[in-house]
Amino acid sequence: MSQPDTHDEFYRGRVGFGPLPGRILRRRAVDLPNLEGSGRAWQIVYATRTAFSAPIPASATVISPATVDVAGSGPTLVYCPQFHGLGGSCAPSQLLARGEEPEAGFLAAGLQRGWTVAVPDGPGLGMTDVGPYQFLAGQVGAHAVLDLARAVRDMPELDSRQSPCAVWGFGDGGRTAIWAGETRPEYAPELDLRGVAAGAVVADPGALIREIDGGPGAGLALAGLIGLGRAYRHLPVDHVLLESGREVIKRASTLDAADIQVDYRHQPLGQWCERPDPWNDAMWRYVLANEQSARVAPRVPVHLYHGTEDALVPVAMGRELFSAYRALGVDLSWREYHNSHLGSAADGASEALSRLASYLQRRPTPPGSRTPPSSQTT
Image (cartoon, rainbow, N blue to C red; front, side, top):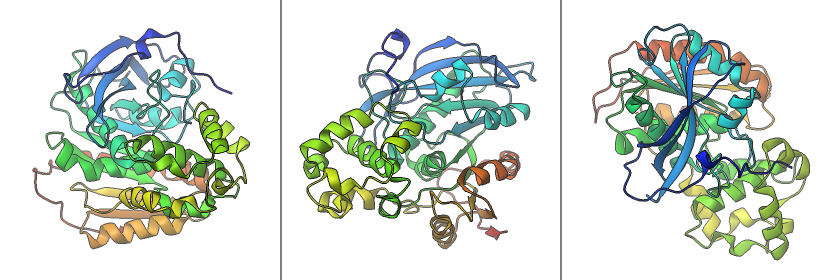
């Protein structure tokens, strides 16, 4: 079982209301010897906000490409990783420093294009005593992404003040990416966000939890209960738990993704709750309804993709999101791959990067306006 790194003071501490969202609290240079195409890199801690405006610190890694003469002179790609776990030493910033980040190839592909790549750890992951990671909580994840883009823009080592940015992610990272697109007009309208690419998006966490609970992916249902419970801790969401459930949550909150999926495979949430279907509790129905995507339209172009053989996030969920965005008039494209969850992540990477490159060449979208719709399916 992974244990939190309590020895590194860099990841300790909280943040008050003084620092504005996106303010860099501290940073340090870091070597990433196993990341192809990386130049200078930094670990940073910056200020962000929960979905309900409480200040929290978040950590991230910012990487400049080795191919540019002036660090930060190109566009910025904020890459949202897939679910790494709820706690312990599985934060992307820690894995990158150890040369163990499983999505390093996607980061390298962005660096090869001359882009600065910023990788958020996500709310509650990486920082000591702030977790567990708020898995499936859309708005706080979006805040962490948008505030990271603000932080990159203000880094003195980078010439990024006028650089446009794009957001890319897959799975949980895809969910975070589209929430960043939806949230940006109200939360960070000054950011020059040009586009979003998102694969295997969990658009409706309630539907996903019902789909996977008690099956091979049941550990992710538990992780969702924990992550959303943390995000909505101001509400009495834990009233459904038995005492055994509180003990399970305490333990699972320290685990990485692999351990969660192995240890809680085929274990239904109802065995730790006062009812067999805790997601149908009135408070949890409210939480899950509040986490549905496509309630507002992103004002930037969006590329969605999904695997038809995805056994973790059903392709029907991606198709429904595409239809909802199309009805909202989003500038949209869609691609299906005849592959599994992880297979389609690899298959879709090249087109996702190409789409983002084309978005970055467009003129910025003025605040308050919408991009013209041009839905494409392939």
